[in-house]
Image (cartoon, rainbow, N blue to C red):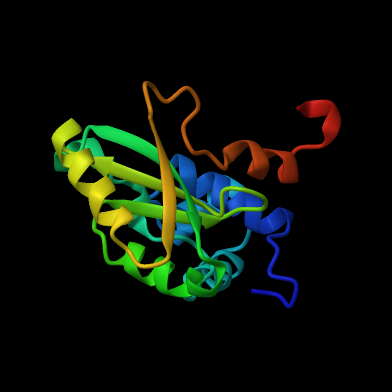
Length: 163
């Protein structure tokens, strides 16, 4: 990516086309976006570098793997052990994502489980991590807005009057 690690309007157009047709060839993407095939190929190579685009695994719903229950866990931790806690959480397969947040609590943890008993087991596992002082668990009843990037890409591509 460029020095500022931001996508420009050309990147956004290409990513919108990829979102619509994830398996499109460079030629098809060039036709769709109005870019040259060489530009598309060079941009795709840059986007495929480690750390630029997220992995394909974000498209796999946990429900399809037998984890229909989603919970959001807030966690207060001993600050000196924050890195140890994060490493331990990364070792729990049902922990999908951990965010360090400002204020109290310290961490926001996205967890999936097979059922309530499985969630109880996972919560106990998290509480047993040295440095975890307390947790608060909320069940996700329903997802109202799925994770999305398309509106941000469109904002980059379309002029304000077109949106």
